[in-house]
Image (cartoon, rainbow, N blue to C red):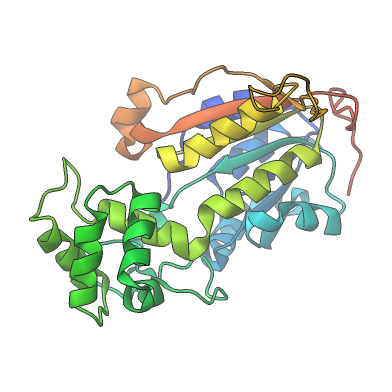
Length: 321
């Protein structure tokens, strides 16, 4: 294996999910299988895991990593935006825990042919799955300048988005990642504020191509539906664009009334479905950041399923698929 993606906050993840023998868990971003391996180990004997990933290469790699647990797991090449359908199709509900570890893996960044990295020359692809139609090349070369600027601003939080979009349009067609990175760097005069000048633009393109925020919001709702009473939802994000909607979703689902403040009488009839286990974010330890610098921006949020509408899972006796 050329690159190994060290699972971020592994100990904290197992504790947050409250992994116990016989439990049933879903890893929505199985990647190379680091978190999944620990979940399967701690849920043995009798534990089960459903692993999803939109990237077929990740599923292939995870299948090898987790080969000793093949009788206890099911790996599906699917975007987590269709989480509930996958779980229902395989009779994998209710569950004791659902994990999202968002962001890119080392394997994806290392492959020049995937186009995720501005440090290696490759085609402007950036798709998690080759079955997806939209590529970064289409966004870069076909989108109107105003739309491109808005995309870079919205998904990259890049304050110089208009200058970057103008530079891209003036240099079309743009064919490779290094060519795009060079255009962005020239557009901002090489200024990156401590990071590579193209970092935010590449992030924005990747998020747009893969509809990451839209799929995340769909998946969070579905994850709550799959959790039994007492089950845990754990989300690890790496930047504010991921963390903000997660925070807002968990906050909303842990409250009763969600009517606008100016509404004199509650009309929403909303009931809380989650209890916040951690009021704020959980961050990696200093030791982990030193050992794995990529973990420094990780933020974990944890919530627990409450209410009477779901199945109770505290007894950890869900039976087999």
